[in-house]
Length: 277
Image 1 (spheres, rainbow, N blue to C red):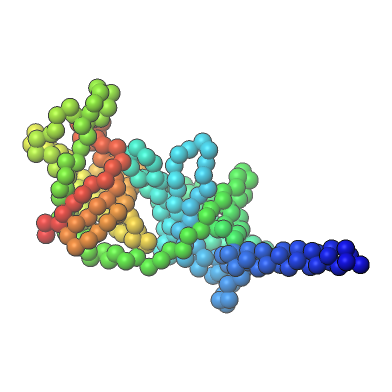
Image 2: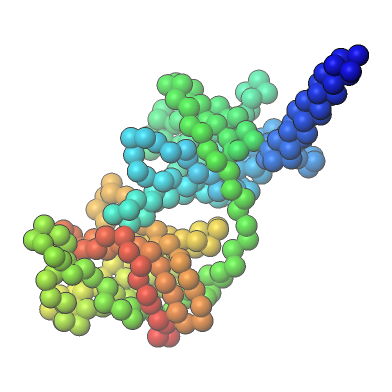
């Protein structure tokens, strides 16, 4: 009798623990279907979900690139490709949603007719899965809530100049940089209120300038530069990651590539700026 009672108590405890774990799993789950908000359609619900977060593409064993997707309400998608050597490049796509037989599909607009990419969407507890309709390839994304940025775009407007030596000191001939510091080395970044920018760098002997437009990402983490200096067909987007912004001091993570001139080319590193105006 005592043995039977002990077994019964153990079984009850086991079931209770399983239920508790299930409740904890539901509590941790960000599945949009569990959200109490009412939506008029699956499209509206999925759009709200995409816009509410930062989507991190699962690690790819064949690549060291960390990709972050940020959807914009105007139909633009910024894909931030973070590498350890070449800085942070950005891909831009146009996106939309469609409903087919109760299922929601994400559409990436192609550069030419008939080149659109279609993905079946599936929200998960950790994020979402996108399955390519034609190839069947599955991409798994981790979700992070996109919080209101503490940085205002107006705080970035002005002329920023480096306060530390910006380039590389090479130790070998096969490394970028110079063996002696470049005289008068500088990097400056002019961010204008009208959305235009100029980035200049170099020294007393040679200098470079890059022009284009800039914007601040929705999460306030990246300054996105769209250069007008690139050739037709080249990706003209680059991101500068904001590490710190305090009064008139700015610390960013970026890289400089000066048309294969190794003296003015850097790997991804921290740049310290001070505002002049």
